[in-house]
Length: 555
Image 1 (cartoon, rainbow, N blue to C red):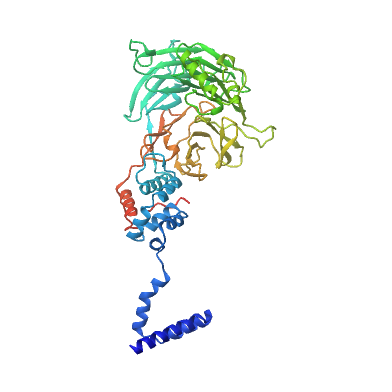
Image 2: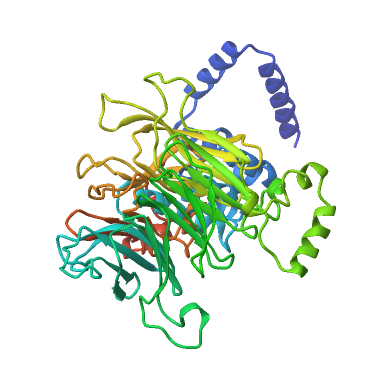
């Protein structure tokens, strides 16, 4: 007992004296002591040394502090941490807010019904890996839909169906029979649903399945046709393709169109530099807006029910794009007496500036634009922006491409995807892309789809851009498609819900379709079904007992 007390006192004195030494003397003292140890003591030290050198911060630190530290890791590194041990996997996997942030980083739509944020993050990484490697989409060629030399000159997709209008078909001796037609193809059932002749070569087309399809023609006319069901709401069934109305007043090819069945409005832009607003059901001309400086290349109509701009509340919106500028017009929709009373009551609660900014202006009185966006610089210098197709409106923001000319490269470019607040005209986002862009096909809150020039089979000319990370994610190579109109009406875009973020329900169906010179249609569809190996990899990541997720980090 006395010896034990004597040893404890001696040990405390040694430790106290050791702590008073300099670091050099401490190191020398430890070296001398280790030299005096036998094999058993060295073994014991080797077993205890990791407990002193390595600390498990996942287990020792408070969960809130641990989660704060882990937020600085990339998603792929975080998944590697899950494979360290079952304890780490359990603790890290339970941090829902951490994985919610990782879902946002990989582009997974966290606003959708997400139950397991970690599994969604793994799925988002898998999708990015497939798109980067060019394996996220597959392509199919639709043949024998039209007889050569006819070709599809305009495409549009709606609710799983592609509407294609033809041009350059062989003419017969009959004046009424031009040889042109409209074909509606079902993506899901992989067959033609409706096919019918039209009066002239189709320059642009829009489908509202299963009710209506409207065609713009190179001869300056437009035509609306019944797709299925009852024509014009009558009680008598009409055959598919039944001509509902003909619209004749343009003096040059119709280059773009848009319509809204609920508002009973059709808008058309033409190479005669005019924009016309029609009554969709009757075919009557409602208004011809002031002539533009050049061809009207794109028009977008948005009902007052589909736009959320406070300064234009309760008004219909029309966007017009030429090679020189983008113009926005608004007007008060025609309403019933009840609707007018409701509108008057709502205007009383709005600021005076909003109520006095033309809120009561009718379509017939529209003469001045509400917003003007120039697409070229003020001077005519060589390094000036030039027109790039692709105008988009999400109900609040206008998106388009500003691109500088680059003549010394086939692929390298100087372009910006610009998003502007339609209410005040201020830029809310500008994403630089150092590649040449043929057209901005579609844009959402997270991703955008671009059509780039065709170079070779290795260059992905149908590309996805991550707007948040400002980088090209991936895509695929599609054949060259010759432009039918300046706005590339021969290219159609599929379902765009995935552009707000990946989700299980959005990454399926048609991505895009292109009309080719050989009278075929090239379709691009999602192909991200999990193979057995991919499922095994994902399961290994989740359990933390197998090797790391095989997808390369995307940053």
